[in-house]
Length: 78
Image (cartoon, rainbow, N blue to C red; front, side, top):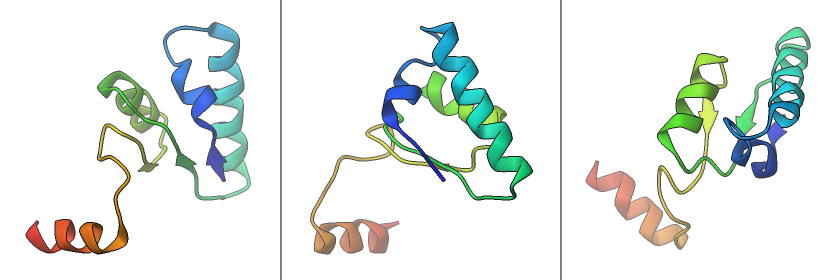
């Protein structure tokens, strides 16, 4: 299950969006589905999602989009 970046962007800003996000996370856990949050841009967003057991995060906080060859080279360098 993928959480849209529009919900991630509202973490700490909009209470209604946070309730929707929390419900999505809770439903995912009850259905035993993996969950990915997209559009993570701040440490606060990453911390909130990690604290709520969202283990797969993607977004500019971790890296900008890049061509496949560059991605493989970046992984090789780590």
